[in-house]
Structures are given as C-alpha cells and as structure tokens.
Amino acid sequence: MSAGGTPVIRIGVVGMGFGSRVQIPGLLKLDGVEVIAVMSSGRLESARQAAADYKIKHVCTTFEEMLQIPGLDAVSIVTPPYQHHQLTLQAFAAGKHVLCEKPLATSLEEAQQMLEAARRSGLVGMVDHEFRYVPARAFATELIKQGWLGQLITANISMLSGSAADPRARGWSWLFDRESGGGFLGALGSHYIDTLRTWFGEIAAVSAEIDTVVKNRYLPNSNETRAVTADDSFTLLCRFARGGKGIINVSAVTPFGNGERVEVYGSQGSLVIDSEGRLYGGRVGEDHLQVLQIPARYTSGPSSSDQRLRPFVTLAGDFVEAIRQVKQTGNPPGPEVTPGFMDGYKVQQVIEAARQSAETKCWVSLPPLQQ
Image: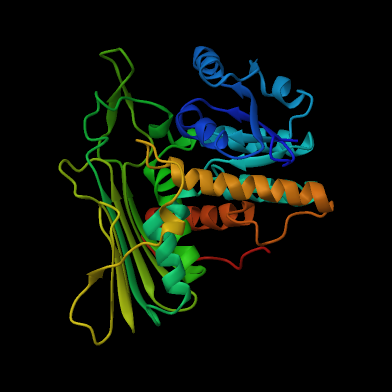
C-alpha cells in the first residue's frame, strides 16, 4: 500500500527515449505507482542513468529478466515499433499488463495477434495515444460530443515542419527505416487518425499519397549516408462511415512550416486549434470564431517543458486505475478502457489501407472491423 492507502502498482519501462524523458517522470507523479525496473536493448548506459536519476532499483539487460522481477505488475513498451509485437506477446504470456507506444505494430497481422493476446490474457492493454488528452483536443472532444458541430462536413489537420529537412541534423535512425516501423504516417499519422476516430467514428475509405522527399540521411557521427526507406510526408483523405470527410496533411521536411493546425467544420459550427494550442469556436449565426476558454479540468496537473507530460500523466492514470479494477474484481477490462488495443488495431487498419491506396493510386475501402 502507498502512504495514502492506495494499492501500489509496480511498472517496468522498456526504452529510454520518450520513456526516460516523459514516461518515467510522468508515472512517478501518480499516487501509488513505483517504477521498479528499466531496460534499453541498445542503450544500457541510458538505462543506468535513468535508474540513477529516478532511484529505480533494477536495470535489466533483457526483457526476460524484467518479466521475472518479483511484484512487477505491468510494463510500458517505449521501443521502436518493430519490437512492439514480440515484447507485448511475452508480457501478456508472463501475466503483465501492457502500455504500448504507438503505432501499435508494423502490420495489421501483428496488431491482430496483439489484440487477441490481450483478450486471452484478461489483462489491461492500452496504447499511448496521449494526444487525446492535450487540453484543446480534450475540450474539443467534449464539445463535439455535445453536438457543437452538428453533422460533420470536413475535418482538416495539417502538420508542416522542417524538423527533418536537414539530412545531417536529423540523421539516419530507425524512424527512417520502413522495416523498423519508421515513417511519419505511423509516428504522427497514428495520432491524427486516432483523433479523427475519437471525434467522428470509424473511417470507411481512404485515399493517400505517401512520399519520401529526403532520399538519404547521414549516419550518426559519419560522412556516410544511408537510403531512407520510410516516409517523411503524406496526405491522407478519408471518408467517415457516419458521413463527412477528413484530410490529414503532414510533412516533416518543409522549411519554415507553420506547425500544427486542426480545423473541423460542421453544419452547426466549427472548431479550430492553432499551432499554439488555442481553441477557437463558432456556431451558425455568430459573426466569427472566438477563443474558447479551456476548463481547468483539462489544464490542471503537472507542468513541464515537454508538453507531452501532462497528457501522458492523464492517460497513465487511466492505465493504472484499470489495472487496479482488474485486480480488485478479477474481471477483464471492459471497452471503456481506452485507448485500448482495439483502438490500436483500428488505427493500424487505416494505416495499411493508406499504404495500399498510395501503391494502387485508388480509393481503398476498409473491410469490416473484427470486434
């Protein structure tokens, strides 16, 4: 028990990028949570440094070693996507709850196997779509559910950045390797697909163009280059089963790009989120959009120079509470535990349809979703 009487949940974190920058400090802000182990398959020194910084007891050199730690309840998998499938299956087989980074997998087949493993285990499986809890998006979700927009006409999301424009400053890594699950369709597109699904329901068909603008990138600390096999830009057009359409336009190689902008337009009103995270809204009959005050319930919580911390803490809190419910009741998690592995599977389905569309230059209808 924690000092407040809350059952302690003990978690191991695998992956020391986002894992050490956001996840570990975020998890430690939750009452009754201990991070008791860390691991990084290729960055042992980073794992040791994180353990020293946050007073974490175990530094593991293998995932099998982590899974055998007495009292471990759950793992957070914060590795490149090509490792998600095997680590997740191992964790469920060992009786551990799983929080997995997005995109859930590198293929729909992998995602299906992970979903089935979660269901068989009766354990909590969640996907780290923490952008759902960014204040402006969270409040927009509430307003859309209340009917602010009426019937959706169109949703437009753009993210134009020069963050990967320089092939030396942003050198070659797994993010630029398709076989490793790299590419911005997965890295950013997964978040945006999840946002649109949350707001407007299932996507019925897609048309996409997927590009690699910068063809080669420098290897770290080298003058040698390696060919890029993953996308750095994409445009995805989608039709929703309930009506309306959406456009996602992303490029990480546009110098002086104006950042992120989210616009949704309906028969009764509109909502816009600008690059500074401000939310604007207007209803039919009003003269113009006006700034909407985001309620404190969406903005309160830990602050950090990394804007992902607050939304991650919200999602991690739901993950931990779901684990406690399973422990208390002995029942498997219900559909209200979201974003779950079914959400990850559905996002993966859209990603694969987008890739098929880009190859065939045709619209691709999504098959019926397996429930």
